[in-house]
Image (tube, rainbow, N blue to C red; front, side):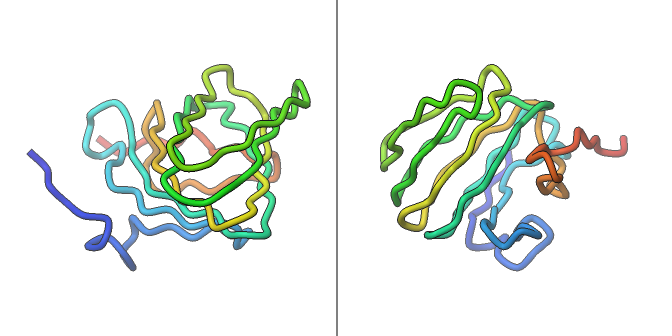
Length: 132
């Protein structure tokens, strides 16, 4: 059994800040736990816009605080995301999150991330693996 808090991983290698400066993520469950998924608490900052495309992962996101507009860049459809709203990127959709108010969310990734990932120039997380 593993028990840990988001508070205790602040400032550790599990607390990742994006090179773009638009978000930070506390990665509480990672690939090295070998459970088949990862779990993160992520904050995207108000006034930012982040293009993402999880070509190598499926992601579920639950908003816990804040306000953002999610755009599916493949269809042009937009969604208003507020606390209690979930979105699932089950088709590797290219998307943009335009943040109106600091956007706090819990994210689950499959396959799990290692904790070292950041978006590349296409908004993609590389598919990294843990050493066995």
